[in-house]
Length: 136
Image (cartoon, one colour):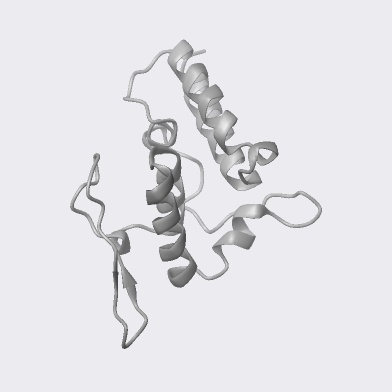
């Protein structure tokens, strides 16, 4: 992460994983949020700082409204298999057991009762449902 002290602009680059070397500016909000489960605690804190500057209302959208309904940032529509695999941290072609195991592990970290958000939990659930539909 780099902070331009004159302008206040924050920029960042991914240093590890499948997107290593890519700038955070190359991703939209749903893509950045989908990466959160794969990041360590320090990286999540840095990403959240970046999101606070680039998408000031992202936390409200991620938490949903007071009635518990989910508000989602604009996305391209239905979740793709590729996005679902990325969210669950799986390789394409993973089996039902792998999908269920990855889903369970992420929900232990991201469920609202564990300090996560309704948005992230919903995205993990959507990823599981998307992939399990292909394994009917």
